[in-house]
Length: 307
Length: 265
Image 1: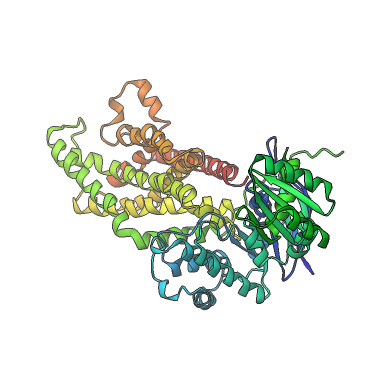
Image 2: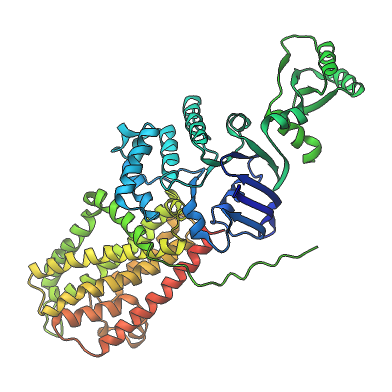
């Protein structure tokens, strides 16, 4: 079967608040699928339903062909979950954390020991294996949380904001491990609000906002379609700003997005790029760069849509 | 347009043998930390026995002619294990549930929330059993046991441990913060310690107070222990036992439902 997670018109309501509002998507075996969106978009709620720890209000949701309402234990045996919050056992050592977790999956001791050795080596935790959790840095804890989630060799790995709160070095190390796992064919579902993270890791993604899916596609295609190739950021004072907005409106090759005191001008076409150069000659209030997922996100969830 | 009704959620609790894995997790942590965990349960019963049994006991004359230290020994067998079970499923479970997110980590595996609750209660009862065995040994050293039947105090310690653990976990499941549990310990556990018939005979109390004491769990536990330690078991003790079983079952169910409501949203 190619689709390991299948969601159709999935809804989650808490009393009168709708956290997930009828979303449909499929995660294919072997890919890294991203759920992007700001805090409160419904990403975590969606993963909690997949992980069978949050009952579905309405709609269809299957994992490996099993209905989350009917076979939670069988589904949970196939999942690896890296939660947003640290949930390691602080009183146990690194190694004991993995051993205790393996037991929850009824794993025979010898097999568990073997897998623990492998994953400690893979995540560069061998030296720390007899240390208590409180002695670990945040980055090491996150690596251990990922190692723990892999102990049952899951069919799909669910990562909820895996690098939030990490310094850049620790973040890159986590990304490197995740890319390695993707190379090994591990299917991943990645929730993140870091667009850069999604660009690095995801094969396909959806952008969520207020419980709904806005768009779906590969990172490159989404950028191309919604933000074009080049962007110019203009930090301008009031009179200049009015002039630029008027200019942009008269040129069909350009699009503009206002966020606080910055104007983002997007070029749809090659002509548009020439237009931009004319409109905003280089200076220290003007920044040229390639378009990225962040721009897609701004375009889609910009003011017009929020208000 | 279709209208979605909430699903009918009354369902049989999903308890399995995996509760044992939760018990094992708590045991592993205890074996790592026992030096600091064990000091209170080791020191306090001996201090109490010395201070109240020998110290205060020198001033007290019971109508029955029994020595005061002999009178309180069976009661201590009941109340310190109560503290052990309630402390474990009160404060310690709350920290696991709320601060450490241990329950969340466990239910991401094939272990269900009902397994977690069951394992927690089994572990709370185990702490009561450990405490009971220790106090039994101490009272034996003080030559306060009159009957070999006293050895039956161990299964009773486990059973009453299940009861106190279930009651404590029911409170934990509705506690907003760790300090909310102070209400439980101040208004429920501490009164049982002092007023449950451990330190003075209940038959000296006015009638209404004796009636009220029937509703207090420790009263029944203490009554059974007195029979066992003194070697005078009676049929009425089966009634006390049944009382404990019913209360245990009721609060176990409350803990299951209430904790599910809290954690599975």
